[in-house]
Length: 309
Image (cartoon, rainbow, N blue to C red; front, side):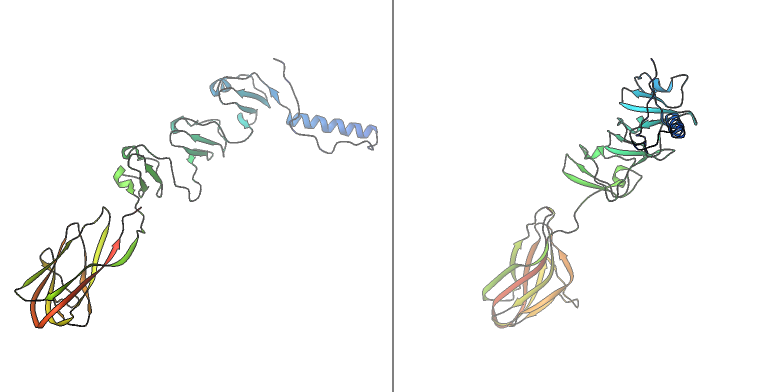
């Protein structure tokens, strides 16, 4: 196949119509043209099927150009040193797996996509490195938890488990799958204070002792209610009461379990806030009464954290 030579760049400073047609000017043009073609000429060779076929070509000259048909990339041969240079940029054809990244004929800055992980790799000049754009850690989802990778991870990587619609975040770059990946749970749930467990007893109180039952706590999955304060009041008289959860007396600030209740409402903080579980039973116990008390009102204040959405 005959070789075709042509300049790959437009010539600059071309003569114009007013350029004097002197012998000296023609000699200058001839010298510049010869130098330009000598530096920039291309030698088109017959296309090859793949990289292996290109690397097996014999009797190469400076500027030889070959098309690799499997990747549709052009390569130019450099005589000194004896290397191939890709023509048209550094974004090269993707490979199926990281193990398929070529170890030769690479240039610093070459980029390839690994289809298996949807990750870009850049040739540093000596090895392929994962391309990590700043603040970009959301990677391709996996079909199930067991598919979360245990190699090549970086702290902060996030992947979705499609089976459970649960996000996982990488917290460690080595170890077992469970050590590297934690379930991602938003820190900010909807937390607010509510008044609950509110009831009243209109009739007179007696000390037998008398038990005043409250309701069971019913909590949704991932919902929490933390009891931290209660309030008592009587419309008449005085009484000494005790608040029990599942039969155990609650301690208030100062260590006391018994509360002296009178007509003025009084708020009392728990010594240690109590986190309710499903079906916790609340009970008031009347230990003593004065002046025939009646009209008991009781309220509890909890910090309620709703289920994450």
